[in-house]
Image (cartoon, rainbow, N blue to C red; front, side, top):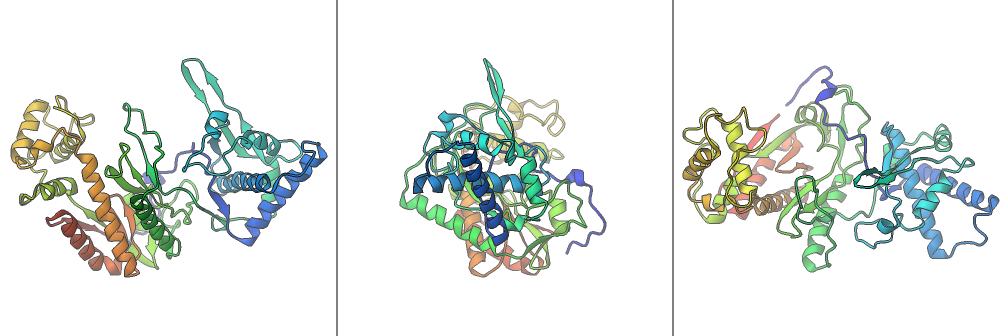
Length: 433
């Protein structure tokens, strides 16, 4: 068990970026939060009447959209205040963006959204402050930024709301991204038809999210000094697939624990009042590749290539680059200047790796890494679902999980078993506590 005393350097925390996008799926879940939001809705309606901004009542469907939009803005602004996120968040006021229907778009993001923001920012209300965005010809523009207004902060002074008063609701948890068109492209969201497969994938993620929502998770901020409060209610996982296919990628992203450093997770996170351990699949991509080929995995460290002893980190980086590259690679990966032999050419290094891994080397340069990542994600889903059936809480971090100390042996056993059944070869699982 990890028994670390004293505060850990806050610089070791991979913190949430100051700039973030509006989360229109955040809702109030307690009586005090609902009453807070409803009070603002009534004040907005009164302001519209007093300023003669509306001459008639909204139709029922329009009223529902109006209330949902006000609620979403208010809930996320309050969350920004609690998070001490002074920079607020950015939004789009573009009618082109807001007019498109999408499974990823919340009801709050509609063509009435910009006008309602202006009302919320009116002097008589002061719920929001807007730093309006702009576009520039052939240069990057700036999105509109929303910040808590004086009226909102004044109301919060008498109603001390907390993270527990809100949670994210109804957001799409099955994300499909297009193939990236260059280094700086993050991959556009892809609309996809609903099928039995997508329904099954989504149901699995939502089952895990429901299970985690009720888990007893705590983080001792007396042991780890964070740069801002940590939202322990942030447990919504999303499964993200790449290249426009549901057999590419598929890792789980989300959860307050993922951005934390490994050191901080082990020092301060508890599950059911127990310290946690981290169990990682080792050499997973190469082992999976051997399994797909029906070949025996070489004994020992798969990154310990003859002739490259002492250069393991750089060798691992190069192997992963080969798995995700398209075509013959002629250069060393970025960042390997000091981790690979400086006098050896990329061709020489690749030749050594290919000779050692001859049974699977024909996959190098075929972008097989995306499919290997999918299999990794399927293994991880299998592990989480199996442990959930046994009421064991585990928190995923790509190819690793955090687990209660007392359950470490059972979790490792399940990880080994699921991997071997899915891949056909034995797994390597390492434990850190």
